Image (cartoon, rainbow, N blue to C red; front, top):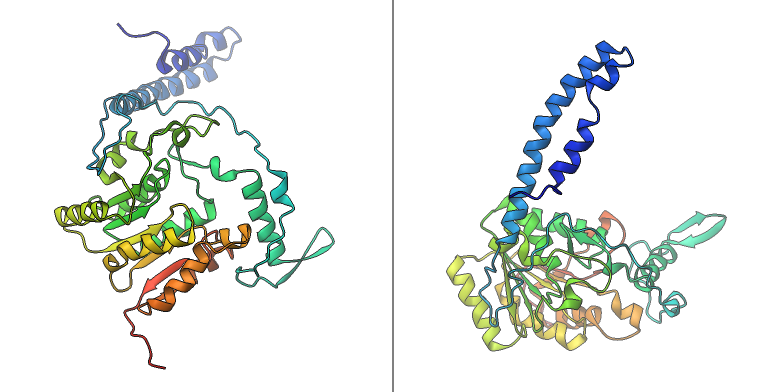
Length: 352
């Protein structure tokens, strides 16, 4: 027996109030006929769209995980409908961050350009670093969602990454640092358009289905493995990225899928040594003209510590077959992953 409280019932009830009879009573016979015709047309369309939506929702409810994990994790039996409402954006402000004074210099392209804003002379760095401070102080990384799944990605960087993926067209993205899986969902959603057989492997020692990863205490999100295309394209590995058993599983999956064109995205805990260990674990899988993206290099300046950016510079000194590529940063003059895109050139170290 169907539940009468369905989207169909609500919407069709609204439409049924727009009947021709109510207009006829006012003498608007011609308009009534037109409205009746248009209503009939959209009535059919509406029923089809709602049935398609119900089919998709039913599909989500029946999803089971497709992961081949070092330690499998799944949200089986817990896939909310697409219509799950957002509970609102909480303003989580850390006032101390608004007064943060960085000790490191700016990494922003054209950082000394002068712009007049509201009668004040500001540099490009004033504006962009000010945005960074607001982004961190208000915890905007806990707000952005892609297809209902929390991504924790600045939208400008998300745009930059989709351009890189489209230009490079890797068969496989290896992501170190899963959190709740929103990044992997985003990458896969782009990759499926140039190659439906492409894959994402995302690796984290913590399950991507922990409550804080799914909800963050703010609003409902769609678990990453509930989305149909993610079920087919994304493999969640629970383990430390640089451990032998994890690397062995990655190599096994690559052989199974027969993929060689790899992009590595390092987005783990943003600690200096962890970045080095994770990048070294998978650098040899990146082919010539391929990329490694080390995310959140801005944290060095923001936290006044050696972090991802310092790791990038030190790593390049011992890996001369890679070089920094800042061309994509010029899209918006801003990136939270500034100087973190590394391209394999296979050039040899020059003798001193």
